Amino acid sequence: MSGWFETVAHAQRLARKRLPRSVYGALLAGSEKGVSYGDNTAAFAELGFAPHVAGLPEKRDQTTTVMGERISLPVIISPTGVQAVHPGGEVAVARAAAARGTAMGLSSFASKPLEEVVAANPRTFFQMYWTGGRDAMRRRVDRAREAGVKGLIVTLDWSFSHGRDWGSPRVPERLTVREMARFAPEALARPRWLAGYLRSRTLPDLTTPNMAEPGRAAPTFFGAYGEWMQTPPPSWEDVRWLREQWDGPFMLKGVCRVDDALRAVDAGVTAISVSNHGGNNLDSTPAPIRVLPSIADAVGDRVDVLLDGGVRRGGDVVKALALGARAVMVGRASLWGLAANGQAGVENVLDILRGGIDAALLGLGRSSVRELTRDDVVIPPGFTRALGV
Ligand SMILES: Cc1cc2nc3c(=O)[nH]c(=O)nc-3n(C[C@H](O)[C@H](O)[C@H](O)COP(=O)(O)O)c2cc1C
Image 1 (cartoon, rainbow, N blue to C red):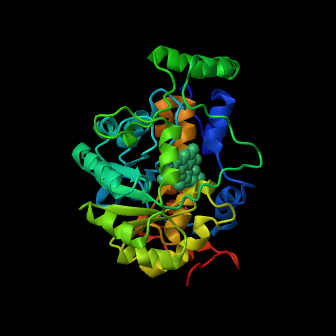
Image 2 (cartoon, rainbow, N blue to C red):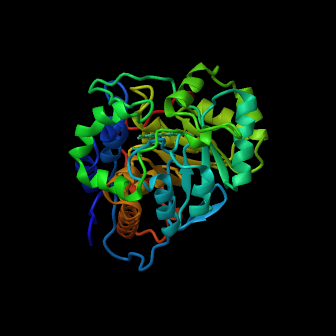
Image 3 (cartoon, helix red, strand yellow):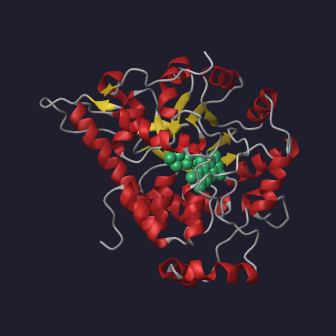
């Protein structure tokens, strides 16, 4: 099969080979020293399994529900605002998720309009940052409702930390002729990537159609980012207000402390994602898998608790579920799949995760993802962190 890959690490290698250097760099992201970015995957590797050898279940069930949607495996797509990876963009990711029976989280900084993404996958959750104040937020919520999204994801863990020790890629404001000339050597060094865009007769789009005001052109990525930087950060009262504007499932993404999880529940959310933004935000925030058990213990019986950050294999998903998550969200894994092989690459990633989850369930003697418990994993002393207790 052309373009097929065996593991997510393999997809990452292909992505690195196929994407222009600056696009790959934007996708790898990570902030400052990359302490959180590194811990997100290292922490999963510290956890062990406690497998059985006989009496194992012949059939294993991965279905579950997240934010009211039934999904065929406990993995959904995390919203990522990244442009220029593939001409199919978020529509290709949404189709792949639909083909594999799962849901799509769509970033408000995405390159494709949410109406197109909902058409490709009706199980779409729209992600929003707090930008522009209450009136602008309400207009975006109205648009999401009209487009038929199934839930909102509100991401609040962003503190505008920009420097990276290994260098940030240059991302232009617009693809002007001058910018294209500057970018040409990088693009020409990646003929396959370039050919994809030439075939689709498009250029990488650096606008954010989901941030457009009604009847206005889509702002550029930087225009939208600038507005966000100037917006006063939200209070818990604002979170409660936003929740009241939407009558469906509502996730708060980016929680890493127990006290914040409790406040989120008080504000009426129906789900949280334990997350450090994939290590792209405040560096030195612990890996979400370390803080998950305390948060799941505190609020897991009242809201859907998800985790995102560092998931690269099915075994990671099983570890997260054993420590109290209902499902996980994947960011880079799906982006690497998209870069490696478009929609088929994202399907490939979801198949890898499904296969790994199945193997772990079999080894652990569990016939369903809902049966996993902490006894299934070996947690080394000092592994967990409980913040805000
Ligand atoms: C390139 C990139 C762009 C991202 N953009 C967004 C975004 O627009 N909104 C959001 O809520 N999270 C965003 N994230 C964070 C992801 O949703 C998710 O929290 C993170 O990628 C999970 O870690 P993982 O990449 O190790 O799976 C982004 C992550 C990456 C790598």
